[in-house]
Image (cartoon, rainbow, N blue to C red):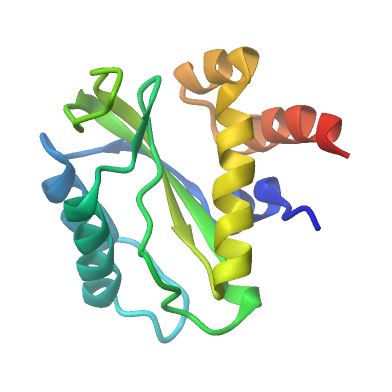
Length: 156
């Protein structure tokens, strides 16, 4: 089964000029200021993401990070989403390629299976050079989702 990444981004939204000079500050400030699914407290999400980041940074290279909790914090698939945040200034994130991160894709999933599928599909998406070029322009939600759909159309 293929998860609809574009639909998850549409649900989660795209945010611009997110402040912070390092990962923890950006994560705390950003997630503390946005609307999350009903029943998910920002403090719980922040704590879970920072615990995951302390194990190993989620920066995957090319200026992209995929912050996520190790375990699902919601129970309904209806509440799953990917929240995209573009940092005001690229921040050091201990990425293997040493590039600072400007695009963060926060994953909120309801079960391990969906979580792994989302991570896998994002990994394929970020390997696409044209998609990464589009991402560098910090596209709005509509353009970003269209680019995701173009790339993911080749997965079927």
